[in-house]
Image 1 (tube, rainbow, N blue to C red):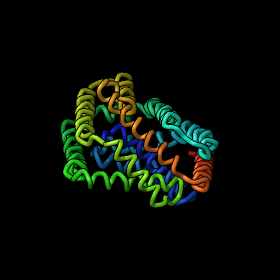
Image 2: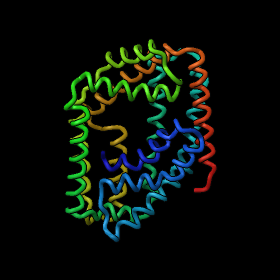
Image 3: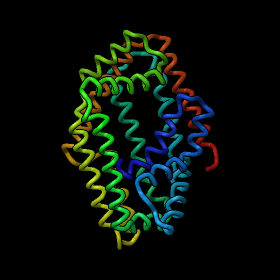
Image 4: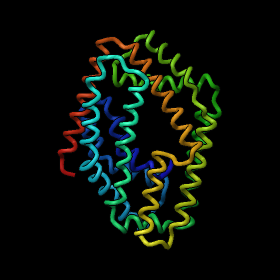
Length: 292
């Protein structure tokens, strides 16, 4: 995992992963998201005694910024989606919803405007030994990826992909019937995942990140901040034409899969989806109103 994803993922994925467990768990998970961010960050980087306190405080600052500036936008987005769920959804409409999510994520570049210069400087002061350890841990993560995907049979990868997709779909619609599961499986089969190409892009991004971090020591914070911000934005929307084309192709395939699944759902399942989005939006508005 690229380090620029860690803050973004911890503040969004921790929240979204908890949604299945209910309102109180969502709120509890989000209120402790800065701790999850710290845990993920230190799983890849070993900070020294000078860097550790300023980076830990940076997680608190980013969490407060995210609560203050981002949650209301997510809640508004989920509210806008609710009237769409009872009807049919085309792949174009689903892609519009995905683009809306990506538009919300563009705001993450603002986190580098709120962290203290000391935290920016801490990232610019990573030693060769720390960066070597980061590379070692990335290599370990890559080995896990290979074992889970590249070294498995296509059938095993397809089964895992179906399992993950079913979990996400049922968190929105409720339990899917056997025929709907077959619909999802068929749609996924028509949208194959190029695991090898994904892995190659993963390696290239990691090397780009390491190259950037190795160039930072000695730079003043006013130069480091925009470099880190640009690196984060590239993690959201790659600038390499090949990577961007691949990302857009996967996105279009995913939109088609989601549209086909929605077409198979019943009125009761669609009503469940509306209620799920309404509840999530309410949770987000509640969290946005809390001091942080």
